Length: 193
Ligand SMILES: C[S@@+](CC[C@H](N)C(=O)[O-])C[C@H]1O[C@@H](n2cnc3c(N)ncnc32)[C@H](O)[C@@H]1O
Image (tube, rainbow, N blue to C red; front, top):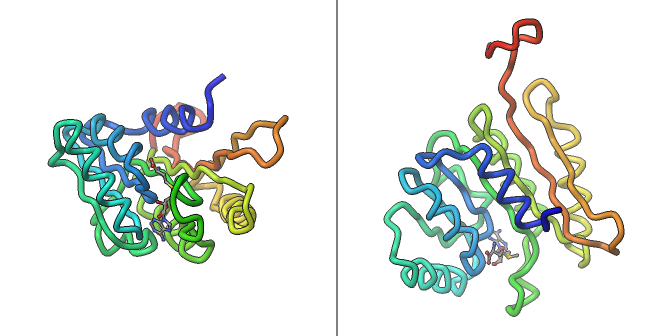
């Protein structure tokens, strides 16, 4: 079995082409930004964070790995994604919570997380997917977990499939919620509508 973050990447890669548009809604130290920048060699990666330190660390990580001209680092909250990213997106990740080893008070917040997630699913192209990695082991994380699940459970079933992937035998483990904008198929012929 795969661990949560490895599984998150697997889900995303299934729906992402090398020329695709990817959004890292929570840049942090840039590990996901780097990973998807390397993958989307003919596409573009947008990465958001509210902490200056996250942008500095990510820029250094990208430079240390050869530099990338297919990445835009954005020092702003992810709920303003529509002001920076035009058109549809193929895939995106929210890795919620706070940056390990840094100021725990700078954590993602329900209000902005939900506004960003709402915009993200609307910006998805058909076949695209958003993955949210949720950490319910702290108070804001517990609220986010409830709100993300409720939001995804209510997404229109004719447009989206939503999923939950979680470990059962640990207390408050991180887990994944994913929303895909599915490809409408003719149920009799299997052809794309
Ligand atoms: C768990 S960390 C992300 C780790 C990252 N994926 C990595 O590879 O290092 C969560 C990040 O979300 C950022 N964050 C908090 N609120 C945010 C917001 N409104 N918009 C964008 N990023 C935010 C935090 O500053 C923190 O760096």
